[in-house]
Length: 96
Image 1 (spheres, rainbow, N blue to C red):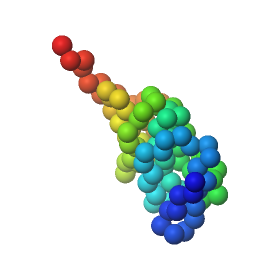
Image 2: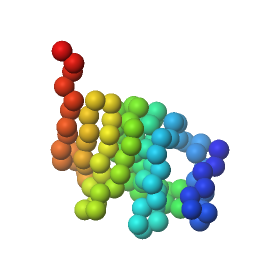
Image 3: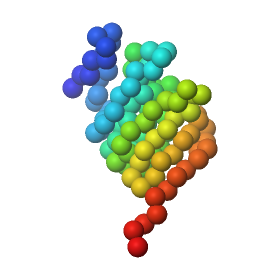
C-alpha cells in the first residue's frame, strides 16, 4: 500500500500496522500514528524515521503542538511528550 501526501511524495506502508492518522508537519515531514504497532513516528519524505515514541496499542491520534511537543490520545489517557520524556499525562478514571 502507498499513501500519497499532498502529491509531493509517497510513503511505503510495509512497516506500519493500522495507521490511523498522518499529518504533514510544517517542515515537510509526516507525523504518523502507527496504531497497532503502538508508536507515533515522524518520517521524512525519503522514509527515514527521525522521531519515534512508544504509546499504548490502539492509540487514536497525534498532533505536533506549536512549541514542538506532541499531544497523543490513547485509550483512557492523553499524553503530551517532547522527544525524550512525558510532560503531562491525563488519565480518565475508571467507571464506578
